[in-house]
Length: 288
Image (cartoon, rainbow, N blue to C red; front, side, top):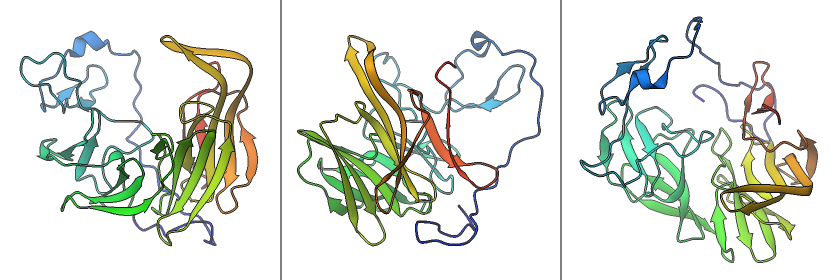
């Protein structure tokens, strides 16, 4: 971000992770009760009791409408704000709703692509999918959609299983293509246009044997969340014997498996840098 140089498989020299900036520490002796807050007025900032944190409710239903789902942030691993904070994207239900990043007022009714994610560098750019098989670039300012590449022959296509993000320099992006007989892990280079594919025959996904896949921030690794041995029944997951779970790390250049992280884990996770500049996977443990 910002003044940091681009990094990737070919990069050499020291790494420059983002510098964390946190507010001054403050002790909180008890958790505020949610009912005390109530429902804030639309786009009116209010202070949370005890902590004093300022919050704003930025979405609303039409008057008298109790059925329509409210637009909200899609997934924690994906940024809601664009690269410079000038725009905000809420994507459920589709299509995405774009808001001014400061006033939270709608800026337009855009025909954004499905599975959209903000560029890490260009505040006007969204990556997404359209037509069921096309990876696209989308300009918010012009509402123009440009096809990057088509990936034909899949029953479904997603950016990392709906949870994936690109490398910090916007170069590498991972897609999951579901087909009869298996799942393909697709690594696309947005700079030189090349694509590498690793098949997983006999597996299901996303949200199956393969839950999600993503690129590490530097672009050196691909992480695949494995969740074999679970079957969805009714309103929940049933986990059977012989399960195989964890996070498999692959070298992005060769797509060879390097190691298994946290065997047995079925938790949500994110990728980032620690304060030493090393890439890390952050998650809760199996118990808590």
